[in-house]
Length: 268
Image (cartoon, rainbow, N blue to C red; front, top):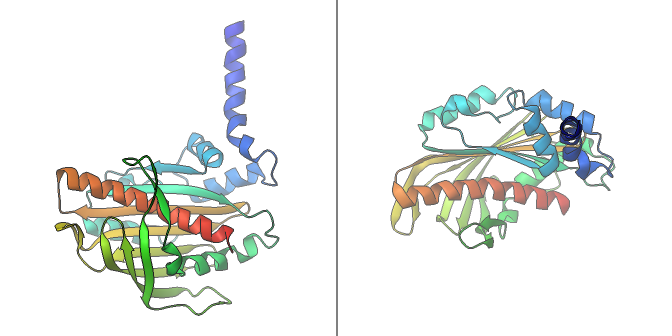
Protein backbone atom coordinates (compact mmCIF):
# COMPACT_ATOMS: atom_id res chain seq x y z
CA UNK A 1 0.00 0.00 0.00
CA UNK A 2 2.77 2.42 0.97
CA UNK A 3 4.65 1.66 -2.23
CA UNK A 4 1.55 2.41 -4.31
CA UNK A 5 0.96 5.63 -2.40
CA UNK A 6 4.49 6.89 -3.01
CA UNK A 7 4.29 5.92 -6.68
CA UNK A 8 1.12 8.00 -7.07
CA UNK A 9 2.75 10.87 -5.13
CA UNK A 10 5.80 10.78 -7.42
CA UNK A 11 3.63 10.93 -10.51
CA UNK A 12 1.74 13.88 -9.04
CA UNK A 13 4.91 15.77 -8.11
CA UNK A 14 6.47 15.21 -11.53
CA UNK A 15 3.66 17.29 -12.98
CA UNK A 16 3.68 19.93 -10.23
CA UNK A 17 7.34 20.64 -9.46
CA UNK A 18 8.29 22.09 -12.88
CA UNK A 19 5.54 24.70 -12.53
CA UNK A 20 6.30 25.71 -8.96
CA UNK A 21 8.54 28.59 -10.07
CA UNK A 22 5.59 30.29 -11.75
CA UNK A 23 2.82 29.42 -9.29
CA UNK A 24 2.73 32.99 -7.97
CA UNK A 25 3.14 34.73 -11.32
CA UNK A 26 0.72 35.60 -14.11
CA UNK A 27 2.15 32.97 -16.43
CA UNK A 28 -0.36 30.48 -17.81
CA UNK A 29 1.56 27.20 -17.72
CA UNK A 30 -0.82 25.42 -20.07
CA UNK A 31 -0.48 28.15 -22.70
CA UNK A 32 3.31 28.17 -22.23
CA UNK A 33 3.54 24.40 -22.67
CA UNK A 34 1.39 24.54 -25.82
CA UNK A 35 3.45 27.37 -27.36
CA UNK A 36 6.71 25.54 -26.71
CA UNK A 37 5.33 22.39 -28.30
CA UNK A 38 4.19 24.41 -31.35
CA UNK A 39 7.77 25.38 -32.20
CA UNK A 40 9.69 22.44 -30.78
CA UNK A 41 8.23 19.14 -31.90
CA UNK A 42 11.44 17.14 -31.37
CA UNK A 43 11.74 17.53 -27.62
CA UNK A 44 9.96 15.49 -24.97
CA UNK A 45 7.39 16.65 -22.43
CA UNK A 46 10.02 16.04 -19.76
CA UNK A 47 12.40 18.43 -21.52
CA UNK A 48 9.63 21.02 -21.80
CA UNK A 49 9.02 20.70 -18.06
CA UNK A 50 12.75 21.18 -17.44
CA UNK A 51 12.76 24.26 -19.67
CA UNK A 52 9.83 25.76 -17.78
CA UNK A 53 11.33 24.90 -14.41
CA UNK A 54 14.98 25.92 -14.93
CA UNK A 55 14.74 28.21 -17.97
CA UNK A 56 17.19 26.15 -20.05
CA UNK A 57 17.80 22.84 -21.78
CA UNK A 58 20.87 21.93 -23.85
CA UNK A 59 22.10 19.33 -26.29
CA UNK A 60 25.37 18.40 -28.04
CA UNK A 61 24.60 17.27 -31.61
CA UNK A 62 26.90 14.75 -33.25
CA UNK A 63 25.55 15.21 -36.79
CA UNK A 64 23.35 17.58 -38.77
CA UNK A 65 20.40 15.21 -38.30
CA UNK A 66 21.04 15.28 -34.55
CA UNK A 67 20.12 18.96 -34.07
CA UNK A 68 17.00 18.52 -31.95
CA UNK A 69 16.44 22.02 -30.58
CA UNK A 70 16.33 24.12 -33.75
CA UNK A 71 12.73 25.37 -33.85
CA UNK A 72 10.20 24.47 -36.52
CA UNK A 73 10.43 27.70 -38.51
CA UNK A 74 10.73 28.44 -42.22
CA UNK A 75 14.49 29.03 -41.94
CA UNK A 76 15.18 25.65 -40.34
CA UNK A 77 16.35 23.87 -43.51
CA UNK A 78 18.54 26.80 -44.52
CA UNK A 79 20.18 26.79 -41.09
CA UNK A 80 20.83 23.06 -41.26
CA UNK A 81 22.25 23.42 -44.77
CA UNK A 82 24.68 26.11 -43.59
CA UNK A 83 25.70 23.94 -40.63
CA UNK A 84 26.24 20.96 -42.93
CA UNK A 85 28.60 23.00 -45.13
CA UNK A 86 30.93 23.54 -42.16
CA UNK A 87 31.71 19.84 -41.79
CA UNK A 88 31.74 20.63 -38.08
CA UNK A 89 33.44 18.70 -35.30
CA UNK A 90 32.15 20.87 -32.43
CA UNK A 91 28.51 21.73 -31.77
CA UNK A 92 26.27 22.73 -28.91
CA UNK A 93 22.72 24.04 -28.79
CA UNK A 94 20.62 25.52 -26.01
CA UNK A 95 17.02 26.56 -25.61
CA UNK A 96 16.04 29.19 -23.04
CA UNK A 97 12.76 30.59 -21.74
CA UNK A 98 12.78 34.23 -20.60
CA UNK A 99 9.52 35.51 -19.05
CA UNK A 100 8.32 38.98 -19.95
CA UNK A 101 8.93 41.67 -17.38
CA UNK A 102 6.07 42.04 -14.92
CA UNK A 103 5.76 45.77 -15.67
CA UNK A 104 5.68 45.23 -19.45
CA UNK A 105 2.00 45.87 -20.21
CA UNK A 106 2.54 45.61 -23.99
CA UNK A 107 4.37 42.30 -23.58
CA UNK A 108 4.20 40.35 -26.83
CA UNK A 109 3.21 43.38 -28.92
CA UNK A 110 6.66 44.99 -28.60
CA UNK A 111 8.69 41.83 -28.07
CA UNK A 112 9.96 41.38 -31.63
CA UNK A 113 11.03 45.02 -31.88
CA UNK A 114 12.70 44.73 -28.47
CA UNK A 115 14.56 41.66 -29.75
CA UNK A 116 15.90 43.51 -32.78
CA UNK A 117 16.90 46.51 -30.68
CA UNK A 118 18.80 44.30 -28.23
CA UNK A 119 20.60 42.09 -30.73
CA UNK A 120 21.75 44.95 -32.96
CA UNK A 121 23.15 46.86 -29.98
CA UNK A 122 26.43 44.96 -30.18
CA UNK A 123 28.26 47.39 -27.89
CA UNK A 124 26.26 45.94 -24.99
CA UNK A 125 28.22 42.70 -25.33
CA UNK A 126 31.08 44.40 -23.51
CA UNK A 127 31.36 43.10 -19.96
CA UNK A 128 29.00 40.14 -20.39
CA UNK A 129 30.05 37.28 -18.14
CA UNK A 130 29.87 33.51 -18.15
CA UNK A 131 30.56 30.90 -15.49
CA UNK A 132 34.11 29.55 -15.72
CA UNK A 133 34.34 25.92 -14.65
CA UNK A 134 38.13 26.06 -14.34
CA UNK A 135 38.06 29.23 -12.23
CA UNK A 136 34.84 28.27 -10.41
CA UNK A 137 33.33 31.71 -10.80
CA UNK A 138 32.03 34.33 -13.21
CA UNK A 139 34.43 35.70 -15.81
CA UNK A 140 34.05 38.47 -18.38
CA UNK A 141 33.96 36.97 -21.87
CA UNK A 142 33.50 39.97 -24.15
CA UNK A 143 36.03 42.68 -23.30
CA UNK A 144 35.29 45.06 -26.20
CA UNK A 145 32.55 45.25 -28.84
CA UNK A 146 31.98 47.82 -31.57
CA UNK A 147 30.10 48.01 -34.87
CA UNK A 148 32.32 48.60 -37.91
CA UNK A 149 29.48 48.93 -40.41
CA UNK A 150 25.70 48.56 -40.48
CA UNK A 151 24.97 50.43 -37.26
CA UNK A 152 21.25 50.89 -36.54
CA UNK A 153 19.87 54.34 -35.72
CA UNK A 154 17.65 54.18 -32.65
CA UNK A 155 14.81 54.26 -31.97
CA UNK A 156 13.52 51.94 -34.68
CA UNK A 157 9.80 51.73 -35.45
CA UNK A 158 9.80 48.35 -37.18
CA UNK A 159 11.95 45.27 -37.65
CA UNK A 160 13.48 45.07 -41.14
CA UNK A 161 13.19 41.68 -42.84
CA UNK A 162 16.96 41.67 -43.54
CA UNK A 163 19.85 43.54 -41.97
CA UNK A 164 23.65 43.07 -41.77
CA UNK A 165 26.38 44.26 -39.40
CA UNK A 166 30.14 43.86 -39.23
CA UNK A 167 31.40 43.96 -35.65
CA UNK A 168 34.81 44.08 -34.02
CA UNK A 169 34.70 41.94 -30.88
CA UNK A 170 37.50 41.25 -28.43
CA UNK A 171 37.07 38.34 -26.06
CA UNK A 172 39.11 36.66 -23.37
CA UNK A 173 39.89 33.55 -25.45
CA UNK A 174 40.18 34.39 -29.16
CA UNK A 175 41.33 38.01 -28.86
CA UNK A 176 40.24 40.78 -31.22
CA UNK A 177 38.42 39.69 -34.41
CA UNK A 178 35.80 40.80 -36.90
CA UNK A 179 32.44 39.04 -37.16
CA UNK A 180 29.72 39.20 -39.80
CA UNK A 181 26.24 39.32 -38.29
CA UNK A 182 23.12 38.83 -40.41
CA UNK A 183 19.51 39.29 -39.30
CA UNK A 184 16.38 37.82 -40.85
CA UNK A 185 12.88 38.27 -39.51
CA UNK A 186 9.22 37.49 -40.02
CA UNK A 187 6.23 38.74 -38.05
CA UNK A 188 6.75 35.84 -35.61
CA UNK A 189 10.49 35.54 -34.96
CA UNK A 190 13.99 36.95 -35.45
CA UNK A 191 17.07 35.03 -36.60
CA UNK A 192 20.60 36.31 -35.92
CA UNK A 193 23.60 34.59 -37.52
CA UNK A 194 27.19 35.38 -36.51
CA UNK A 195 30.34 34.07 -38.22
CA UNK A 196 34.04 34.86 -37.88
CA UNK A 197 35.60 36.85 -40.73
CA UNK A 198 39.17 36.09 -39.64
CA UNK A 199 41.17 33.09 -38.52
CA UNK A 200 40.86 32.53 -34.79
CA UNK A 201 43.75 31.68 -32.51
CA UNK A 202 44.45 31.01 -28.87
CA UNK A 203 47.73 32.80 -28.32
CA UNK A 204 49.88 31.88 -31.32
CA UNK A 205 48.08 28.59 -31.97
CA UNK A 206 45.48 28.67 -34.80
CA UNK A 207 42.28 26.90 -33.78
CA UNK A 208 39.62 27.81 -36.37
CA UNK A 209 39.76 29.03 -39.93
CA UNK A 210 37.89 31.95 -41.45
CA UNK A 211 34.09 31.44 -41.53
CA UNK A 212 34.47 28.14 -39.65
CA UNK A 213 32.77 29.28 -36.46
CA UNK A 214 29.03 29.89 -36.60
CA UNK A 215 26.47 31.03 -34.06
CA UNK A 216 22.70 31.29 -34.43
CA UNK A 217 20.25 33.03 -32.15
CA UNK A 218 16.55 32.56 -32.85
CA UNK A 219 14.12 34.60 -30.76
CA UNK A 220 10.46 33.69 -30.73
CA UNK A 221 8.11 35.91 -28.70
CA UNK A 222 5.23 33.82 -27.38
CA UNK A 223 2.34 34.64 -25.08
CA UNK A 224 4.28 34.32 -21.82
CA UNK A 225 7.81 35.39 -22.78
CA UNK A 226 10.69 34.74 -25.17
CA UNK A 227 11.83 31.38 -26.44
CA UNK A 228 15.50 31.92 -27.24
CA UNK A 229 17.37 29.25 -29.16
CA UNK A 230 21.15 29.58 -29.45
CA UNK A 231 23.77 27.32 -30.98
CA UNK A 232 27.48 27.32 -31.63
CA UNK A 233 29.01 25.21 -34.38
CA UNK A 234 32.66 25.03 -35.40
CA UNK A 235 35.36 23.28 -37.34
CA UNK A 236 38.37 23.25 -35.03
CA UNK A 237 41.73 22.81 -36.73
CA UNK A 238 43.39 21.74 -33.48
CA UNK A 239 43.22 18.55 -31.45
CA UNK A 240 43.67 17.55 -27.83
CA UNK A 241 43.71 20.30 -25.25
CA UNK A 242 43.14 23.15 -27.75
CA UNK A 243 40.09 21.46 -29.24
CA UNK A 244 38.63 20.94 -25.76
CA UNK A 245 39.32 24.61 -25.03
CA UNK A 246 37.50 25.68 -28.21
CA UNK A 247 34.58 23.36 -27.40
CA UNK A 248 34.19 24.88 -23.94
CA UNK A 249 34.59 28.38 -25.36
CA UNK A 250 31.81 27.81 -27.90
CA UNK A 251 29.47 26.60 -25.15
CA UNK A 252 30.40 29.61 -23.01
CA UNK A 253 29.51 31.94 -25.89
CA UNK A 254 26.13 30.32 -26.40
CA UNK A 255 25.30 30.90 -22.73
CA UNK A 256 26.85 34.38 -22.74
CA UNK A 257 24.73 35.43 -25.73
CA UNK A 258 21.65 34.43 -23.74
CA UNK A 259 22.94 36.41 -20.75
CA UNK A 260 23.45 39.42 -23.03
CA UNK A 261 19.88 39.25 -24.32
CA UNK A 262 18.29 38.67 -20.91
CA UNK A 263 20.27 41.41 -19.19
CA UNK A 264 19.60 43.89 -22.01
CA UNK A 265 15.87 43.11 -21.99
CA UNK A 266 15.60 43.58 -18.24
CA UNK A 267 17.34 46.96 -18.61
CA UNK A 268 15.11 48.26 -21.42
